[in-house]
Length: 341
Ligand code: FA5
Image 1: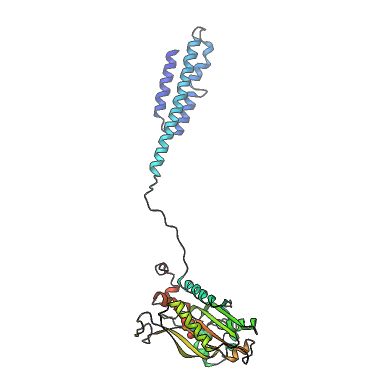
Image 2: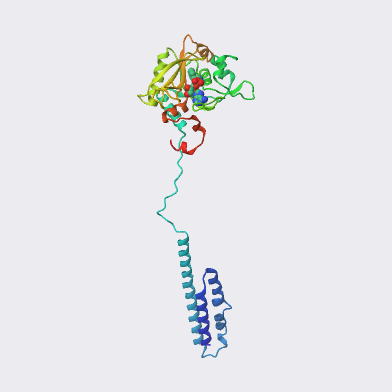
């Protein structure tokens, strides 16, 4: 009987040696330590043995059970170590590898300029007034002193909607009328930023969709000197003390007198090139004293009130600030362009 027990032990241990994984280990446990294992059978037949053999066989059988159980625990631990080792090798973490960069977002260059414009004009006391992008013919033209068929309308190639008299605003100037009608007869000092739309032929300096920031100041005794001082100061704060700017006489139906402000060309430094059309100057805004008819349409008495207005192009200013030679980059969605700012 003892010999049979020794064989059971040896067979079980040598089979345990060949086990390679957790599933094999469970099978081995059922086969060698389970209820129908050879060892359990020996133990169950203990009562049939002669009385004097029973203690010795019983003791040996229990020794073997304990030995097999601790061999099982040992094997299980060894298998776990192997598994850990394997996964460490397979999923090795290389701490010297560079990390994945987190995507940092940034503001579009035109938005950066817009915010700079807001900041400069806010410091001068201008508040933001938001006006609509879809306008009526009346606000975009008529109330700005451009009746139907007025030739000045040709200055703005317009996107009309299918609803008669409703269009996409061609400039931020219609916001002047909205603001005036809201505040008259109180003094006003507002800026009106936002998108404008023109059915233009695309060039390096003209987009069909672009921002403008309108400025409007109305009160008593506001003169052209106030306009000139405000815009000269604006240009210095925007482009630096040494950048030259100039006022050039112009015409807008809603201002009288009217002017345009130019900044010295950033490409040629004023000597003349293709970007500035050989003039040495680049136009950044239109401006003037608010026309008496427009003041009246807004609810002010031109005998008592005067005012000035201007309309700046932030994309053009951004082109000047960063020496961007083509405005079409702004809507190109090219990361190589956007990542530079
Ligand atoms: C106007 O739109 C007038 N409403 C400006 C104004 C306001 C005059 C108040 C008097 C009083 P103009 O069409 O010149 O004017 O446009 C003004 C500015 O908008 C230009 O100087 C330019 O900077 C910008 N701009 C005009 N058209 C485009 C375009 N297609 N793409 C990009 N910027 C443009």
